[in-house]
Every structure is written in structure tokens, then in C-alpha cells.
Length: 153
Image 1 (cartoon, helix red, strand yellow):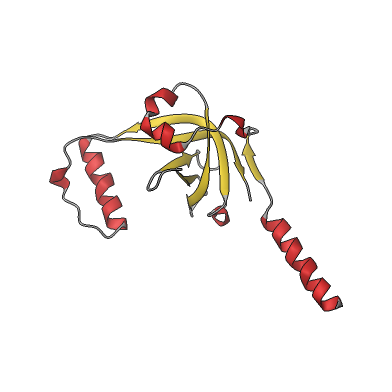
Image 2 (cartoon, rainbow, N blue to C red):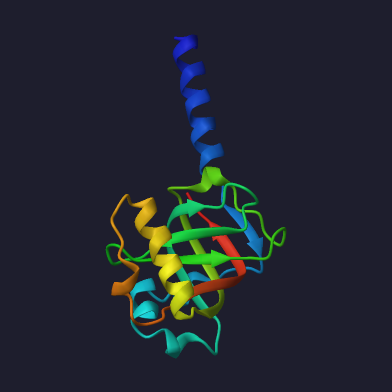
């Protein structure tokens, strides 16, 4: 019986350690969350004031922890959270956990050549064919530069 309680205590401690909330930068208030799909549908509406988002972490920079990607509430959408190297270091181990981030939405305007290069890289990662001549318009990508991040679970 002692052995069982020892295992149970170890399992509970493991769960508690894994459930530790991690905070970076400023305190994040989750009372005014905006859905990522809402932001991506009308990004211009969110460029001039801080915005708070939340989602599942689906990607983290494996080199310096300088970015992470949150899954949108809509399928196949995501939003990158990017900091200057060293400002915040997001652990790779947080993949799959929930995060809340507050910050400034920034546009990244690509020219046509950069757009083709970006889309070619995306296609290569997905092992898909890509025809550069099919691209006729430049893209604008968006990322959140956070003032604060809270990783839950």
C-alpha cells in the first residue's frame, strides 16, 4: 500500500509541475481576448492598439525560442508571436499548451519576389508542387509582437 501511495504522490507532483503557468514580460489579462480568426479577417482594424489573443501553441523556434505560433479558432489558420532574440525565450516544451499573448499586431509587407520565395518554402515544407508564375500578387503577413505572454496548462 505504501508503494501505491508513493506512486500516486509522484504522479500528482508530476502533474503539478507540468501544469505550471509561465509568464513572460508584462502581465496578461485574458478578459478581452480577440479570436485569431477575427484578427486575420480584418487585420487593419487591429494595427493601432494592443490586442490580446489566445490559442494552442503549435510551433516554437527551436534555436533561440524567439517565436511561437498559435493555432487559430478556425482550421488552417495560425498567428506567429515574435520577439527580438533574447527578449523572451519560449521553451520548445510548451508546444501543445495553451497561451495568451498581448501585444501589437505588425504587418510584414512582401514584394512579389519575396511572396514567391515564401510560398515556395511553404510548399516545400508540405511536400507540394509550386508554380511561381501562378503568383501575381504580393502578400502581407501579420505577426504579434508581444508585451506579455502567459503559457497555461
